[in-house]
Every structure is written in C-alpha cells, then in structure tokens.
Image (tube, rainbow, N blue to C red; front, side, top):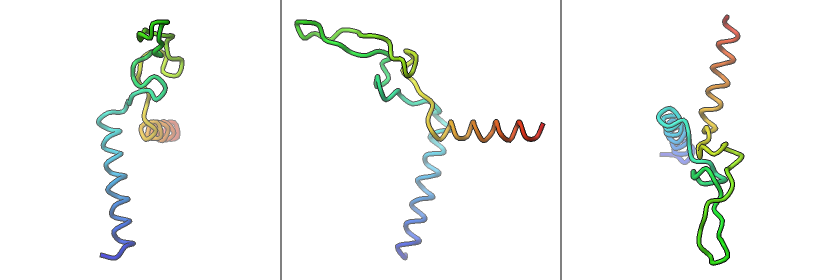
Length: 83
C-alpha cells in the first residue's frame, strides 16, 4: 500500500469510529469536573470533600460531544430549510 492510500484509509476509519461513538453515546464526561458534577476540595487535614457545583455542565457531569453537536446543528439546519 502506498503511504497516501494508507493515510486516507486510516482517516476514514477514525472518522467512522468517532461517528459511531457519537451515535452510540452522544454525551461524554465533563472535562472540568471529570464527570463528578462538582469540584473536589480538601479540608485542613487533607481529607477530600465536595466543593462547589460545576458551572460548565450545571452539575450533571456530562457534556455533549463535538461530533454530536455538529450533527444536531446540521439536522436542525436541514429541518428548518425544508419546512
């Protein structure tokens, strides 16, 4: 296989893999709170305790994946354009 053909096959494989991941699981863990929904703090003794709610994910711990967001935008644009 030539390097260009191999690179394009790998790119197609990665794209289809990410598309199937977005279809199967449209939400991923929040990057800021790592899916907990709140920040972790330590008290004076060094023990972990719950902090404030995460403002980015509104304390759900989940976020929408970029690929799923792009799909939702394209579907909404198509739906609004064909009414």
